[in-house]
Figure 1: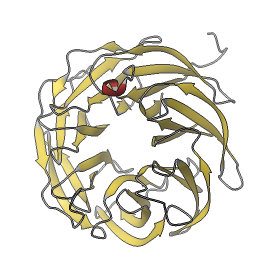
Figure 2: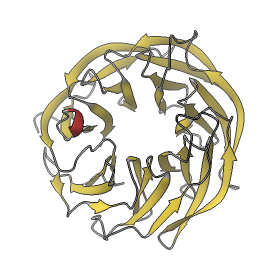
Figure 3: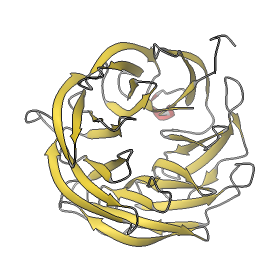
Length: 343
C-alpha cells in the first residue's frame, strides 16, 4: 500500500446546497494526523452526517432536506459506491444517524422524530421505515422550542438502550429497540430552555455529557446502564466568559482514554477542553478552531478533527497529553463541511 501499512480513511459530510461536494474521502497519515483528499461522491443532497457499519464496509448518510432520506454506500477503494437507492425516513431534516442491531436510526430535527430503517444481511437498506417515534413537547425558548427537534440518536455503550437528544423539548429519551421500532423507556428532563443538542458517553459507560445549544453549557450526568437512567448532576459553561452573542455550541467528544472532554462553539469559533475529575469537569482552556463555524468534532489516532462549515475546511490538532489542549497542525479544503468520521 502507498502508506506502507494499514489503510485508514476519513469520510467527510457536507451541505451540497451551500456548495459542498457531497461525501469526501480522505487518507489519514498515521502518526501525523494529516488528511489528503482522495475523491468525492455527490450521491444525495446535503449528506450532513455520516456513520459506518461495525465492520467499516458500509457507509450511511442522512440527506438533511425537507423530505428527509438515508442512503447506504459500500466502502470500496477510495470512493464509496451506492448500495441501492436512498430511502425516505418519513421525517423532515434528519441531522444525525446511528447504526445499531440491524437498523439505521435517524434523528429528524424538522419533524421532531426518530426513524428506524431495517438493514438487509448485506448491510444495504431493506426498504422504508419499520418505525417512526414522534417526540412531543416544547420549551420556553419561543423561536427555537415551539415543538420537538430531535438532534441526535445513538446507542449507549452497553448496547441495551437507544438515546435521543431533543433540542425542542429540553430532554433526552431513553428507548428500547424491538421488532423494528423504538419504545420510550423514560424521558429525562433537563433545564428548561437549555436546548440539548448532542450527548457523548464517557468510555467507562457510567457518565455522559450533554452539550446544550441554546445556552452554552454542558450538563454532566451519571448513566445507569442497568436501569436505563440518565441522572443530571451539574451544568457548567463551555466558555470562560460571557459570549458576545448567541454562542451556538455544536459538537462534544470524549477522549479515548476518558481523561478529557472537548466541545466546539460555532458563534465563538473555539474549541473548549475539559479535564474529567470524577463526576465533575474542569475547564482547562479554549483555542481557536482554525476556521469558521465548527459544526462537528472527532478524535482519531491521538488527533482532534474539526469540520468547519462556513470556512469550508477540516482542521486537525495534536493533543497535549498532559493538559488535553489542542494545538493546530493543518487543514484541508472541504466546502460546507459538516462532519468527519474515521474507519
